[in-house]
Figure 1 (cartoon, chains in turn purple, blue):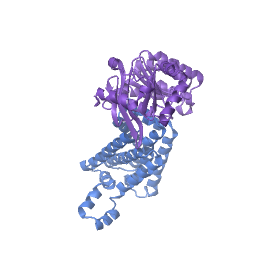
Figure 2: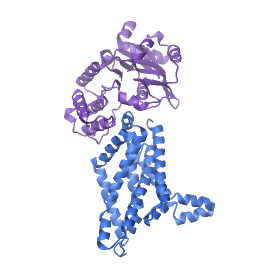
Figure 3: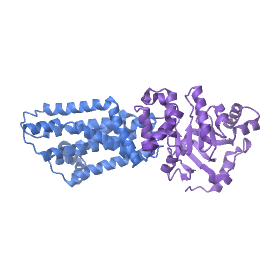
Figure 4: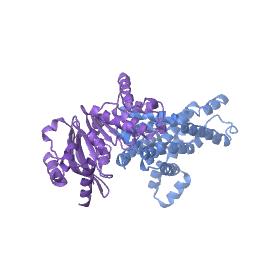
Length: 275
Length: 243
């Protein structure tokens, strides 16, 4: 599997990131078996820019991990690597026991990934698009009908089902993409800003949806909306300039700093920048 | 294989979902007829399609470049490549799916020129074998052009750049076998090198197939050429898909 020994992962986490000052960096070796995602020393550069710098964390079943951080912090890059779209420069991660470097196809079968800009094929109808995703994921016959009957109402896209995707508004487009990521009922969900562009009601619905799905899945979401973190996330990681600054729970952070999550975020990311 | 079929189906349907494909087909068919008849097709009083197969390379080059240039360039520009490669589809499956779908589309375009062989068969007694091998040669030639176009569409995010690069590459590979080029090359290069370069040319292999003699070396030339460019496309796409 991965080439990185566990001991090394631990030492870099504690030494390199220095999360001790701002939060508790949890090591979850005891729950290793129930971890659906385990990231080890993931690193990716784009030319001279280090987008993700040696991050390691584990996420278990039932957890909703919120990925927070300023723009350009490396959230999307990290998620793209977990979704096996970008290969990491070094380090690796295992999702449901499959390694993202050596076995990307098995990983992709087990995850649902919603990309940041909600990419879809503009010239296709919503129905055609969802059927294409079913084709690619080998969902056939009755199973396909059931899957479509399940995701179309929960993403409330019935009214646009036969429209071409280019005619949809941003919110509908995102919901269509969300439907395509949920269609195979994956164990692991990686959602890059899932509520971006939705109206307040839909935001609420999507958050409820994430909450209900959380019990038997493992979910990572990235967001800029801190209230969303409080509402849906059982744990949050603050990342800036490619490094994990804090790995804690939303309530834990608030208690530790005696202020709102907003302020905690500002405090942590600003101090770190000037440091 | 699942990924291949999913991509293939989507692509082939996609051609007919927009009016673009029909416009291409109509233009192709118009010029295929127009250029053939302009060369005094009837006045030749010969029941064969030599003239028609003579104008096809140019048309197919344009048609293939136009079909191929958007294949990956658009996918990368709109970001849908991120969707495609986070589904359980390998790069090879996706590349082959797109290539085969585009090749089928060109095959349909070639089949739609059926009125010409029908006309010839009605007016005279043409050699069916020669016509069939002519169509096979044209289909292989279009596959060659398409493979080159597929590669260049993965090179650049801009369709126009991909299209121009494809046009240039196809023109070089086609015309390098022309007598004038060969004569010029033989003044500056040793004879062995000239023969090698000449054997790379589309033209010689295409014309040898047109004569109705299907030789293994010509078939191999096209198959290796197509496989090579398609493989190169998977390599470059794997590297560049995310940039």
